[in-house]
Image (cartoon, rainbow, N blue to C red; front, side, top):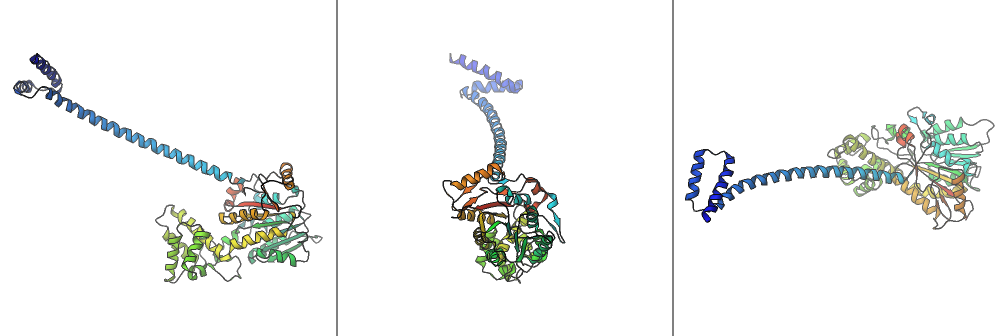
Length: 455
């Protein structure tokens, strides 16, 4: 019985090995060794099965490798889709934090001066804020940052009922242009009293009190603060504000002030230089820049904007972003120095409280900011001023009525005991304005209105 089994096994193995096309002599040698070998024939089958298993194993490896590549490709596509989805969600969240203006941009608002085009930002929106649709005529108006007079001249032309106007600025060059522009609007029989003053807006209350018209009784109907820099300031290399020009490290808004950016870079303590870059510039690479600025002092210091830009460019060579990378870093550094030189944030906060005090009941204060630090100060100060209520009062009904009947630009409000923030979310320029005036892209408009009935 056992021999029969062995014979069957042998024939089966012969059939399998014939697949490998052995020659007859090889088959005979193999047959002879099979019958003389003491090893059970099962081992022969095992040898054959090992060769087959190796093939299967290699095939399995190839299949596994292929599946792995497909999995990686699928994962990559999935990550790309997730990244795209995340970007879309972030863009949506950013859009929800603001109210984009739908006003049509007036290209006639662009006025070409001696050095550069001056474009008042969000002019149509500002006119809406102080329009008579609020039910209150604009008899007195203060422009705390008159600049070249773009907003002021438009307000004066739009309000024939205006009796008192004051414009102030710390920049004498800008103020001269504003004075010429505004003076051209007056006729001989005009009863509008206008004052144009070379002063920082932190003195607004004392200036109003000293004027002959005494507008603080009962108060001013409208106040505007445009915190942005005009094109003629940025494009003038002698002022030191521009990243792409070469001029002195000045950055003073008030040419009569003593502190310059050069003083901070070459004289202030190292830790203070770092704090300015970190807090005012929100620069992530502040520590490295701080060390390089301090190191430059031993080599004669920094005295021009080109020298500072060169230092920043060399400090960001290994970082991503190329030219745009170092320009963005330089912009943040210049912003930080400008804020420090002019003490902008502290002056802004104090002036917001002062301006609100100067408003008449029902009067409005509008502020256009251009970077997150300014906007944060404006937002928080407005909320502190009005002392928000958890429940509305009769004033809330007044605002709701205004929104429904007259002023469509007001979307969401915050009601308080002393007034109302008319822009819970800031208004930003229309897409058309952003396209035609690139410097308006970061602008945010916030408006606060004093309560009609004095507390």
